[in-house]
Amino acid sequence: MSTSPDAISTDSANATPATPSTADAAADDATRDIADVAAVEVITAAAVHLMSAAAVKCGLAEDADAQGHLDLDEARKLITALAALVVTSAPDIGNQHARSLRDGLRSLQLAFREASVVPDAPGEGPGEKFTGSVV
Image 1 (cartoon, helix red, strand yellow):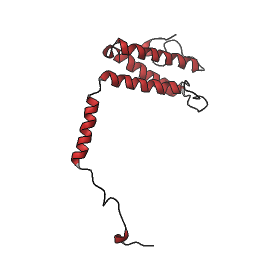
Image 2 (cartoon, rainbow, N blue to C red):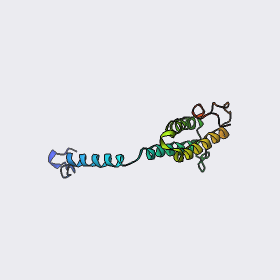
Image 3 (tube, one colour):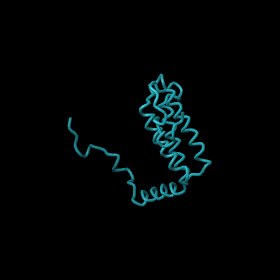
Image 4 (cartoon, rainbow, N blue to C red):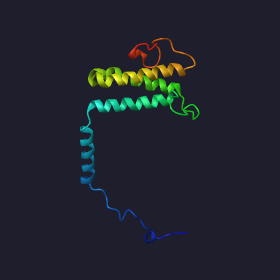
């Protein structure tokens, strides 16, 4: 079955194209939104994301084991990244924020050790090159 070019209908002919000024305005709004966020909030949000992902990979989420989310190799990477972030940013974000992040990090490091079949030597666990041994 052949169709003539006149028989083909396109919705794009009726659509209103985005003007450069509309796209620029959206970019300006996004930049303003980012500019209004304090660095401590960005750092804390990143740490919370790393903590959440590591907790799931350590099997701490409900039914994580049953759903196949337990992945200690991935957990090790996430905990190490979290430790680097927490330790290096602590002087800049202040004790109030750093204390809770350190507590969460330590809990994850201990949970990793508990979930691990073959325990790491003291000081060799995830993130321990930044934090020191947790045992």
